[in-house]
Image 1 (cartoon, helix red, strand yellow):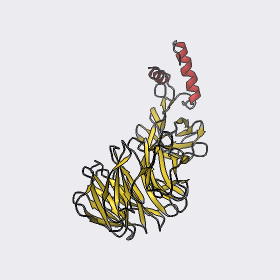
Image 2 (cartoon, helix red, strand yellow; image 1 turned 90 degrees about the vertical axis):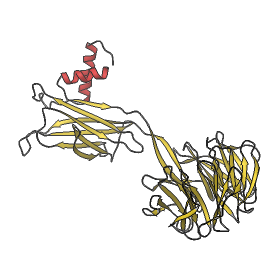
Image 3 (cartoon, rainbow, N blue to C red; image 1 turned 60 degrees about the vertical axis):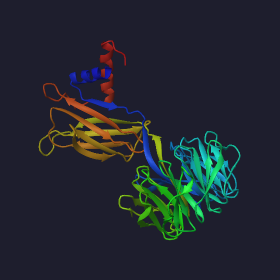
Image 4 (tube, rainbow, N blue to C red; image 1 turned 180 degrees about the vertical axis):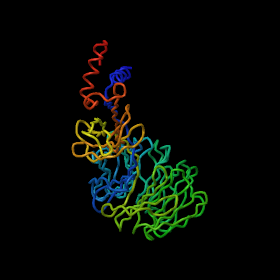
Length: 458
């Protein structure tokens, strides 16, 4: 109510009123890809909006598996050469904890509620369980088959599935008791596995038979015939709607696309050399594939099953890939706007105006940001802020007697949007003496004086 009253006072006074609206901090979500680079001992962070690496995070020796918590706040990375798991804070892209888990950790998966992390321990034929609240291993290691590698958790969190490449089997763990309740023979050298969104099926890459086996989770048995794919299949991922399965063929530099309705390959997409890890974006529109020999990530458009854009360079020998939706707080910004009359007339004999905007965040100027200048929703011009956070717009031609001008910053990944408006209203349709336009401090003083005389407090 006070704001409305102040605006009314300003217009009645015939002033040009700079109105600056403060925008509170708000959550910003973005989709991020994390790639474990086993040769350079780090993790590449890819922003899917631009498909560029925005950060590189050092971790332990020989990173292999990578998983993102459901809330997107943390990333867990297995370090095969350090017998540990690195915990990355996604807000700062720094390692905040290192958890010792056992010899040669490989696969990693997070429970749906984000409370537990399951890690396959290749050197001890077991699975370690990490409590994410304390980042410590809890309970005894869970014995599984020989050479455990890939691991996945069911959507309801009740089961954990482990591919045992040395036992040609998949171990099924009951998470309520942390005991193996079934061992399913799936084929020669199972490497990776993925659970369907409804939890009814598990897809397992069979490296020794160039195929994919499908497990019915209700009976813990393999159903149907193995699905032929390319040579030496490694990674596997299921689309969010469960209609497609994507398999990396490391021996053929390709990805097989399986239609789950028919369990047949409907497309084969050529990617980089030696593809390993694979992940599907949350909206199902893109597939990200890490190729270890060419040290890059290919992006597949799922609508056309073609690679789009150039491969994204990452670290040495990329392996595991995971995608998460990250929520970050953007910094509030402040935009101020002044309008100044040009001295003299323009070439057409009209008075002109120059709009001057300034953009700051936490009191500091923001450089290189786009400011749009408009009047009555009509675009006037666009300018980029300089090192002082300033942008200008020269308004050509004759202006209406009653006009409002607006400067807008649309915001970006780290900064909130903001707007500022200045309105001009002259007495009897004539401009006020001087410029007829006051800066913000002058308006503030007059408004506060008016409020005080009316018995209002700011």
